[in-house]
Length: 184
Image (cartoon, rainbow, N blue to C red; front, top):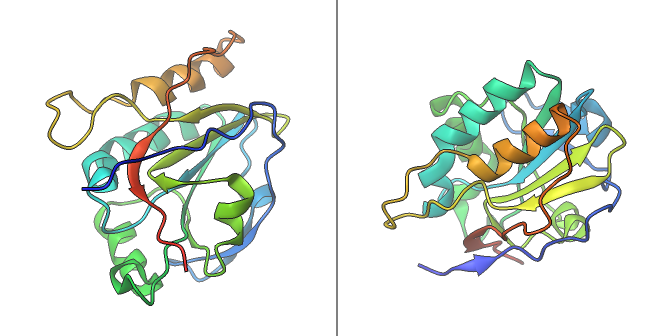
């Protein structure tokens, strides 16, 4: 299993806009459409990556727990579906339904959005504050497939709580580790 780390986009970066189609509803979404009053989480995931499969339930829990507090959530898949057909939009639809994703699951066919976010792996998490500035990027938590650490979303939850409590973010943010994005 390949282990690719996040590129760690510089903190303070303004959220790149996008206009992508949701694999479930077939509706287009831009960054502005998913923005939350408190902040916004952009997640790069895919269907087949064992690292994503490992954290899927917690991603859903985090989104459900924090959407009600004013955060927006979106997931984006940027993988090359010609080489990895299991990540195609029709399969994204199935995965979103099976996992009860409470957020849009967008398909980045051109991979331009992944490049704009400097996304490197799945899963890769980006948290923007109410001014759309990056305040956290990196891992969900320390759990990985096979390492026996429970999945609890600690790192992302702490970053979300820091926004809610007007507390400073940690300086020692850890990169996510997962499958590399499957570039064309």
